[in-house]
Each structure stands twice: as structure tokens, then as C-alpha cells.
Image (cartoon, rainbow, N blue to C red; front, side, top):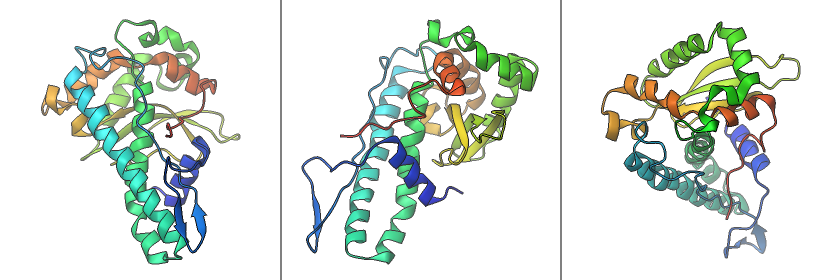
Length: 246
């Protein structure tokens, strides 16, 4: 279970607080600064991942589903600021699940889009992440062995959730790699650093693969952005994720 305090801290660390555009929440002469998050721009066209992920899925997944998480997160954060200014503890508590769900959805999808690259591109080649692949081979004996283990974890998710390759970010943890899953829109929090993720919600594949989750999982490997994954593993990427703000 994701701790709501950890989730807020994660969001705050990734983007500085700034006033919501055009809106200043006032209560008893107290102004509350509220971060407003925005849908990130993709680095590729909606049809760039075909035939592995269709343009129709990408348009709905990014433009509708992710946008809904962003919209609902901003509304909930504004309501929470109002409740906090009014010292309404019950109101703040009532909003925590909504913030956790939509905040997690925004974080997870912001990571996921950067995990993807057109098949055949330089970024989609495992040799673009030599350090990461070497660590994977050390842990799972081979890249194919890792793919089998990761795919099994994805297909073992009951209901909706995410599969992650994570690096231990604890200074004393040795930077080891693990496969973990999270439920619904729970993000990876704490010391683990997300290396890459796969969305196992039905909206990520159903229009194209119907109930064929195994085919979706098999094909997702063709569009993994190994370059970005390698940078996350080495800690050279520009932050774990920085959700865009208005």
C-alpha cells in the first residue's frame, strides 16, 4: 500500500510548487500555492509504435486516460488546499485516496511514455543500455531469461496494475535489480528507482489485443526504450520523472 505522505513528497520533489495558473485559493486571508500538473508531450507520434501498439490505443491512452488522471489530480489538490486552509481535517482525509490514485496514475504514465520508443530505432536496441544489460545478465543469467521472468510477473498480475524493473536506490543496497509489481495506480516509492515499467491495465492493450494479454506482453519488448532505461539505471537521466506543470 502506498503511503499518501510518500506520494505527496514524491510529487513535490519532482516539480517545484507554483501557483495554479490564474487561480489563487484564499481562505481567511491565507493564500495556498497549488501545483497544477499538465499532460506531458510525447516524444513520438501516436502511430510511431505500430504495429506493436496501435495509434488508436496511444491516442486514447495518452490523450484521454492520462489526461483524466491529470485533471482529477489537479481538482483534488485544489480541494485539498481549500480544506487545509479551512483546517478541515475530515475533508483532507477524504481526498487522500483520490490524490493517491490520480497522482500515481500521473507518475506512472509519465514514466511509461519515456519507456517507449519506435521499434527499430537506436533507442529501442538493448545495446543502447550496455551497463543495464550487463547487470540484467548478471542477475538473470541472460537478457532472454530476464524477459521471461518479467513477462511472467506481468501476466501474474490480477486485475489492473504495473510491472516494474527497479534498482535499489539505498546507498547501502548495492544497486541490485528486482522485478516488482504494483496494484492499480500505485507508483514505486521509497528507495527503489524505476528503471522501466509496463502498464497492465486493459486500456493499454484491449482495443488491439482483446483478451490476449500474452501477445501484448510479447510485443511490448519491441518498443522498450533501452536508452532511457539504461540512463535511469546509471542515474544519468534527467530525474526519475518530472511531471509537467502548467
